[in-house]
Length: 234
Image (cartoon, rainbow, N blue to C red; front, top):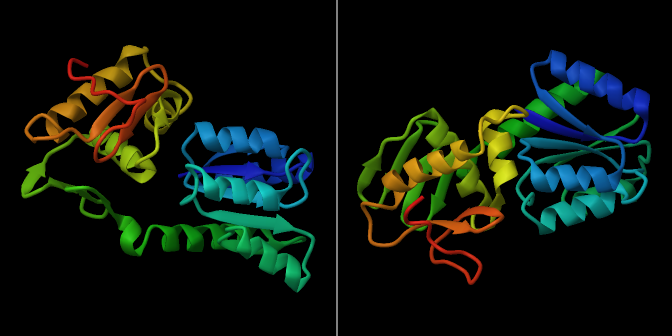
């Protein structure tokens, strides 16, 4: 699981990152709103821990922008010393999934992260559906129409990111980060895996779901856009 922690207090940020890494999470950090927004838009995260009082863009505004973009489904836990009811309500109105007031115990934050992740992965979010393509995240079963699709581990991970972001365009960098973290292989590796995924997902069927947005990345969606074109020879 990869977390993004956005906190302007350097000591608190370091403590949070160290503790959460000890709990087994991969943690990226940002100390201001603009950096946090950039990371959230260009990398894949399972949850965001967001301080309210930030330089550049405050946490409320940042959460609203996340919910209006590709991170609309990424869980957000807000951290703040502002414990008035109206502040908490504002946090939930802007899209936060949970709200933790400072000071707090690190084990409580870890427990809340675990609980929010369980909720976000439950119910309909465990079954991804785009058109006639379905992916059950619990059983790892993939079907298109009435046909079973058999994918390897990288193909399953790649498909999950594309379906979770659908119909948005997913930049190459986001896909490479989701597949290989900070150490992606050569530049042709992603193209090769997209090609393999197309052979399974698109080739046997009447219409493609995976589209290339040249110079940017890929999208998985029913139909195409003026920016997207099928990379039939990828």
